[in-house]
Length: 486
Figure 1 (cartoon, one colour):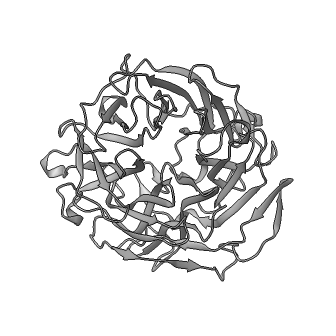
Figure 2 (figure 1 turned 120 degrees about the vertical axis):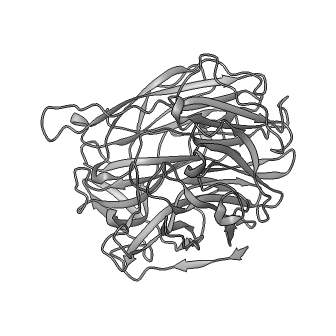
Figure 3 (figure 1 turned 45 degrees about the horizontal axis):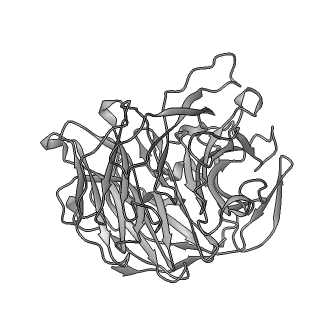
C-alpha cells in the first residue's frame, strides 16, 4: 500500500488552465475553468516489455459515507484484446480530502495471480455486509488457450484487498467484456444486500450475462441470460428502493457509412435497451428498445464507443446519458442527451443537454453520469463528466482533447455552465489499443457530502518521443481527481 497525494498546479497554462478562475468564449458558448488543483491518484509501477507503461485508463468510483473508492487499469496492453497488467485502486476515507492508493493482489502474474491481463474495473459497496467490491475481467494467457473469467476483489475498509473471487469462468474459448457491479443498499428492499454483476460474452455476439451474490460477494450463483438471450454491451445495473433491478445497456453496432461528401461522417445507429429483475436476480426479463443512438464516429482515431452511462437517484428515478448528433445539422458533432424513467417501462423524450450551442462544432463523447443518491426528483443533483474536442472536424495531429464537467441541481431540468477540468491534450500522448487511442470507455463521478468527485484520465507529453507509442517513449497518462469536490 502506498500513500500518494501528488498535487499538480500546472505551470504550463497552455496545457492545463487550473490555477485561475476565468471565462473562455468559443462558438458562442461560455466555459469556466476550474479554480482547483489536480491530484494524481496513482502511478503505473510495472516494467514488463509487453505493455505500454506509465499508462492508467478507464477509472470508476463509488462512494459510501465518508469513503470513496476508485479503480482503474494500470499498464495497458496495446493488442490481443487489450487489458492491463493490473487494476489499481485509490481510496479516500475523509470525503476526498486525501487519498491512499495501491494495486489489487492475486489477479495477474504481475501481482501473484494466474491471469495474464485484467480489464474493465467497476466499484460497489454492500452496506449489509459492509464490504467493498471491485469487479473486473481477467484473461488467461494465450499460450494456454486464452479466454477470460469474471472476478471480484473484496475489502472491508477499501484499503486492504483480498485475493479475487471467481464469479464466472466460461472456459478458455470465451472472452468476457464490460463488467459492471452494484449492490442493493436499500434497507426496505426484500433483497437488501444482494449484489449484481453484469457483463457480456464477446465471442457469443455480446450475449448479456448477469450474476448475483447474496453473501457480500463471497460466492456467486451461475450466470444467467435475459429471457430472450439479449445481446448488448456496457450495461449498468441500478437498484430501486423496492429491490427492482433495472439494467440500461447498449447494442454496439458498426458505424454506417453515410456517404454524401466529406462533411458527413460515419454514423453509429445503436439501440438503447433495458431489462430488469423483480425477484432479486433469480431471473431476468426480456431486453426492450427504449431509444436509439445517432452518434458520429469521433475524429482522430480515438477509441470512443457511443455507449450509455446510467445512474439512479434516491427515489429510484433512472437517468441515462449518451453522445448523440440528432440535434446537429448533418451530424457534424455529438451533443450529450438524456432520457429518464421512474419505473423502467416508460421513458421521457430525448433531451439535449445544452453544454454548447447547436452548431458550435464542439464534439462531446465518453460521458459519465453521477447522481447524488441523497437527493431525488426535482432537486436531484446530477454531475456529468465527459471528454470533448472544441473542433469536431479535426485530424490526429490537430485534435485538442479536453475534460469537461456540467451539473444540475433540479433533476436535469436545467444545467450549469460547463467547467473545463483538464486540457488541451494531444492524441499522440495516448497509448494505443486495437480499437484506437485509449482513454477508456468510461470515467467516474461519485458524490460525497453533497460534493461531486470526478475521476478522469489526463495525459501529458511523453518522455523520449513525440508520441506515446513511439519506440523508447515513456508515456505520462494517469488517473486524476480534484483537490476539492465540485
